[in-house]
Amino acid sequence: MMLLFAAHALYVGNNACSPCHAEIVKSYAATPMARTSGAVQGGVNRGVFRHEDSKTDYRVAPSGLVTATRGVSKMQQQLNYFIGSGAAGKSYLYAKDQYLFQAPVTWYSPQERWDVSPGYERDNVSRWNRPIEPECLNCHASQIRFSPSYRNRYATPPFAQEGVGCERCHGPGSDHVQGNAKLLNPAKLPPAQRDSVCAQCHMSGDARVDRAGQSWMEFRPGFLLSDFTAYFVTEGASQLKATSYVEKLSSSKCKLASGDGLWCGTCHDPHKVPANDERAAWYRTKCLSCHSTDSCGRPGDCTSCHMPKGKVADVTHGVLTDHAIPKIPAAITVSKDLWKLVPFSAADRGARELGLAYASLFSRTGDPRQESESMRLLSAVPADLEVQLALANLGERHGDYSAAFSLYRSGKSVPGFAPALVNLGVYFGLTGNVKDALAIWRDILKQNPCATEAGTNLIKALEFDGDHEEAGKILALQAGCIFR
Image (cartoon, rainbow, N blue to C red; front, side, top):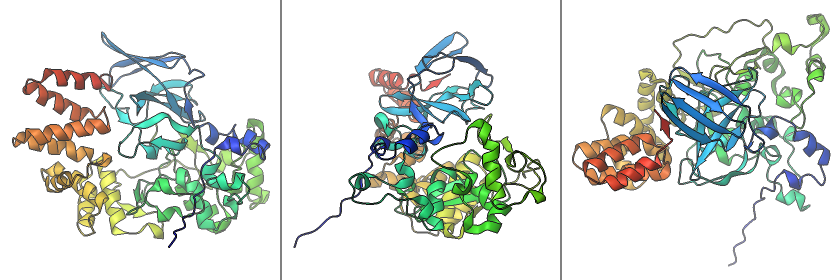
């Protein structure tokens, strides 16, 4: 019996589109989506700033060389790649032996200034050890070239194409360029699949959880995003976030009244952006396709009143457009006691996904109510690998290493397991099982050489045993990961 295997369409890159779609490719190349990542080749803005919490002075040279000075100590690091189109800002990445990390310096375009990167604001050291994971890079670049067994290891360069390519919205194009198939047009898809194309990168939620056996990164245009991942939002929250466009639009009266008739493509042409002097008229025309001037009577730009720019809650200095389209804009007031998660849609319901979402959020907030909900939900669902990882990470915080021990013994050493593994190694060391402790910390450093907690423990253990040679090698490996 002969088995027949269907060949999958392959990614071919924007250049393959140019022969037939030259004007579209040219106009798209000037959009923020097409310019949201790349190599640091043409230089960066010169600048200096001081981060008070870490008492570190930063100097950024046009070449991308960053000098960090703290007292009499100094270190330098070369920026290799950027993410962000520059419309709101650009963050920078550096490579260390094919491992990719975020630098603590970001250029904020509206303020025309350098400052510490999002998430580093309250650090009392200059951290250079934040791993760039594929899920982060995937919305800024195309055809990510990562190593699945590692948390942040990539080929050089880490992506085959800079920015968001044509195929992110139209699907792999090899069959189309060979004349064997039509290219997918998102606007002609059923509404749920159509909206999934935009939501894959323009929706964040407060937690995103992959479904069992699925990965958000495997989503392709034409599929339902909800088949791959579930989204959760904090009940009662209304903050504006860097990628909260889908959540905000879904809550607007315009969307609620229009239903599936209103989507991102109603107002945005993904292939081009209007010039600065054309934007007011462009968006006013979109608004007047549903509304009349009688309801307002004011000439000019509708969005300046009804889609105001506001401060972003999760990005320092970030200011983005509020897609909730308020009739009467007002200051956003948010309760300080926000902890409960709710599914973004009916498709996102499920105890497993909600339990994992609480575990993810708890790791950022430390709210014991989220921890309690996560333990309650996850203890009652089948213990697949992701559930085991979450239970291991939650349990070790209370000295219960049973789940982590079971995972470690099963050989399932995966990147997301690192936090529990670090502390399991400590437990092994304290109970006299130094051999397993050393093996755990060495394995973590293979996955990520800037895993400073594992590195610090390993160095101390090696020095205690008198192995100063390996301790010195580990110390050199981690040089530059944290500037204290």
